[in-house]
Length: 344
Image (cartoon, rainbow, N blue to C red; front, side, top):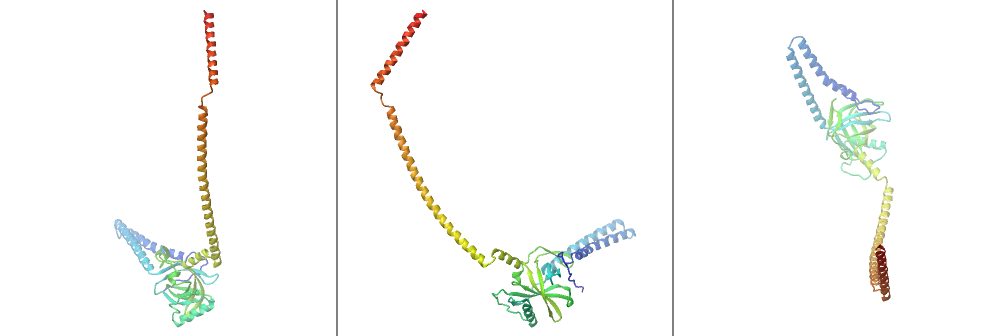
């Protein structure tokens, strides 16, 4: 069986994308051209009539398309039975990195090794190797409060070949993962991930992003297995958000003190507003009473002035007015007689 090689990429363009695309084109175009040239040969050599040859071509084309759809459905079904890590980034050192499509068959491909407290990398790897050699999980049911590391032995569907600078060419399909939380808490598998499965593109219903840092190798009965730290996952994303929300306890204490101060200041301002509202209501009431008083005073003055204007004038003013009116009448009568006489 030919094993997929671990390509030593220097970019993150994807594992074997060009090769997989070329193989897919060959898979699709080869039957088409065989059918086309085969039909053409039969017609040219007069083995079959042209109409019958064309019918053979279109029937064969329909069979090919149906076969491709069936093959695609089978690959989709096979891929859906695994947990997918499409284009997972592996870092072996500061310069050597690659992208690998991983397909983990649950639950057989996920074996819990143990829970390990944080320590130096050397001590952690040494303790992991010891537990794997003994074959017994460490603390399978214990939950430590000292930020433990959860270690799992992962088995991939396909074997991987890697050229190690010290150990030479290695072939492995099992590796050790050091997770920040339990496996089901570290990873969140969601639908929609596109990946290659058996040189065929599929849309996977359970995929997750992954970054691994290889920190050591474990030789288990002649099989070399990389010990990897899970450097990026859904859990790492959530932890990043938590660090942004609460950078440190001192910040939380400062925010709490500030909120307490603002709360007290808000209460004081509310009391001041209530007091001002009471004063304003009292002033408005007094203003209403004052306006009523002024209005009544104006009515009294108006009434008083009205009585003064309606008072009967003295007798001498009345006699003076009658004399003036009589003199005017006499003058007008004299003028009328003179005008009549002169006109006559």
